Image (cartoon, rainbow, N blue to C red; front, side, top):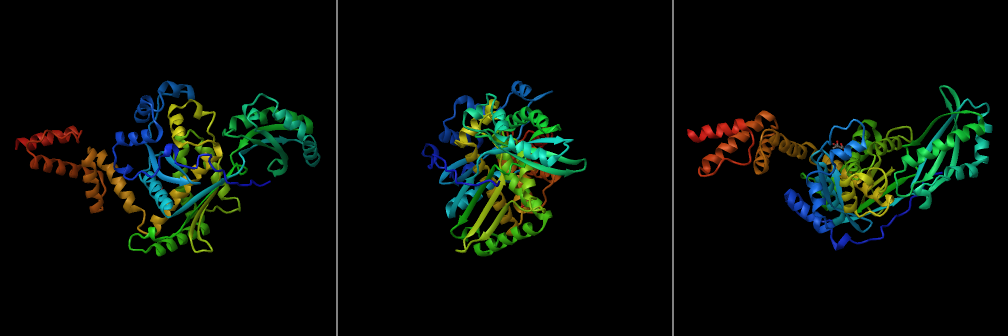
Amino acid sequence: MEATLKPVKPTQRFEPNGKSSRIPGFYNLDLAQRLDKLDDWLKLTRNEKFMLKRETLTPELADVMIENAIGVFGIPLGIAVNLRLNEKDYLLPMAIEESSVVAAASNAARLIRENGTMTGQASEQIMISQIQIVDVADPDAAKQKILDNKERLLSVANHNDFTIVRLGGGARDIEVEILETLSGKMVIANLLVDCRDAMGANIVNTMAENLGPIIADLVEGQVICQIVSNLSDRRMVRVKFELENVDCLARAGYSGKDAADRLVKAYHFAEADPHRATTHNKGVMNGIDGVLIATGNDWRAVEAGVHAYASRDGRYKPVTKFYFNEAGKLCGEIEIPMAIGIVGGVTKIHPGVKILLKMMTVETASELAQVVAAAGLIQNFAAIWTLATEGIQKGHMTLHAKNVAVFAGALGELAIKVANQMAHEGRVRFDRAKELVKQFMIKEQCEKPQHQDSQECKDPELLKLLDENKKN
Ligand code: MEV
């Protein structure tokens, strides 16, 4: 049985609260101003604002979440703006350390909303849980026995007081396969469970553990593993965009048409070569993982599923496609398994996740799945458009240069000045950043002798130097 994908339109087809996710200049605002914009969008409480700014998770909660906790580990949280999918606007929270990702997603989302449309489809939220039975005398007869008892086994699986069963989900079907393995034939019962809005791993693992011994008894075998499959290919999502015209892609001396042709050829490279496909898909996951982390989802599970799905034909391939349709329009498409939830697990206890899910205004897991897949598609689109035109290093280097400048002691405006200078020189190095910080600070001091010691530099060595310079 293949997953059937259908449009899952949000009930709210307008911008939440009448607001648009198109927020020009969001990039140029400071942290406090960006939070104010979110407040406009979401009506944040003072506490929520504080948490987003300072502490989305306390060490005390971390201690409850994992063993041997010693604290909480920080990672930048950004908002990609401009996304419109299925005629609804979204803000995309991304927890990610890679500097260019949030800006690239925002830019690609803007290009698409201004020059085309993006739509999504999702399948039912079916997870697979696997029960492995070994030492079966007659595997074919065992398979038949399981199938003959399917209804009884399904009602056993659904018997416990599972919330998803009360919400209309639960075990739907059992499929049986006989595997030739290194230790001979094994019987595998795959339990298909509708998980509704939960990620569902816990529920389906429990169901499988309840059912495993019963099936083993039935077929007179031994049960070994009873565990969810992260190749969740019955829980699929597809997102597609189409650009009305490609003039907006003109860049680095290439016309829009040339850039689009080159972009499609960049995709063809990935389609033909697993080495390139791996990096291409890494760019897709750049968009996906950040949103999954910010929404408390198991990004390792999604990563595993996506890469397995990328190899389903026996060769690793890209999970996105780019092509010109019959009308000559540039289209981009992604199709991936996406087992995620908006209820239960971390979404229930992590205060930051609760705020960010509220910000996303998603009503179902399948709606979130589409938004996450869209994040992967636009991120990949931005990456290969850049690769196919100006190359990746220019932008990367500018952002990397800012990090190096900060590391060398600069903050705020000074960091930007130092970064720009290093990018201009094509020399992004810590020692050069140190030199430039000193030069700019001294210049500033000489130009404004009445100026107090700059607040922008925290480097004690440099402050001493400035002092000495003043004396001279
Ligand atoms: C870098 O994090 C991601 C890219 O390498 C993706 C790609 O090559 O398509 C730029």
